[in-house]
Length: 212
Image 1 (cartoon, helix red, strand yellow):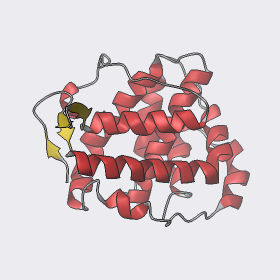
Image 2 (tube, one colour; image 1 turned 90 degrees about the vertical axis):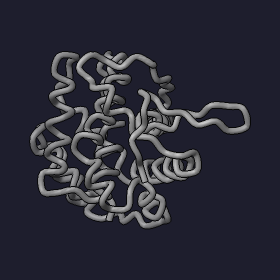
Image 3 (cartoon, one colour; image 1 turned 90 degrees about the horizontal axis):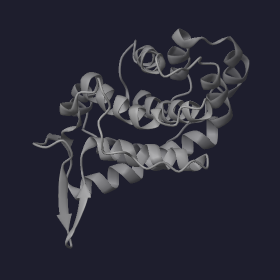
Image 4 (cartoon, one colour; image 1 turned 60 degrees about the vertical axis):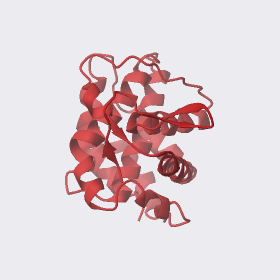
């Protein structure tokens, strides 16, 4: 289970090498993996963007936990993309993004996603949506926002989701979810409703094709 660390980016040593073990590093690796599926190579920057609380990045994991969690998140993320890439991309493309409004839009959709509560499949949906949102920033000519999106994800998880995650088995629970338990579900709904979505309804709509 996640514990609080004492530095901005926690690290553990193994065989003489250092590996980042903070929540931020896990988010970065997941985001990088999702973006790579779209052919975009992204390297995280060390600098924490203005307006982001660096204390929110202190949650840390031991090496064994981290490796399994990252692998599970990548598996779930890739399965999600295989099922819903076209629909999710189409919805995100309808968002009117700019550097001045991106953070507000991101938080608005995220809040809508969890408006009726938190479940693991909502959290996975949030992470996959966040990656699609980051790629949409790239497509709109704002590649510098990807680093900021990575920190918005971590801040949102820490401020809004961490207590629930802690009380529901910790991040280790995603390891079980990654074991071929994805349910496709409600594809017809996706095709029919994508064109009518606005930013405030997108989050609620995403709930309808989350993991079960």
